[in-house]
Image (cartoon, rainbow, N blue to C red; front, side, top):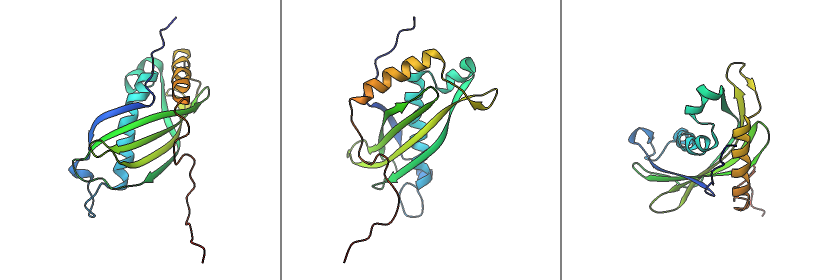
Length: 166
């Protein structure tokens, strides 16, 4: 029987900084690089689940994004240190639903959030496939650990214009 690790709630990724090439003509981090930073930070929880880049060759499976919703809340400037958190909200036999928050690591403000659904793919067949048993066990352990965090603010938020009533 495989030992299931204890999972931090939430999982944190540290060490990322806003690079100069991520800065746009407005003098702040361009929207596309928020997604890149979130995706880079996602390597930490995926590796913990047995779904990291190093696991693909052995398991033959990887995760693809099905849906994504980003909220840009406060700008980040060049060289800002980042702290990105990951909360697993739900999972089934082949999908993960999670929420990530990007904070300025020194000033501790929330700069952005992303909510995503990923699906496990058999890389040989290029089709959806169930997680391997050892991954399912880890996913369930992380889901239970993260369930205690409650519902994050901004989860399942809708997009549109809000009008003030006259």
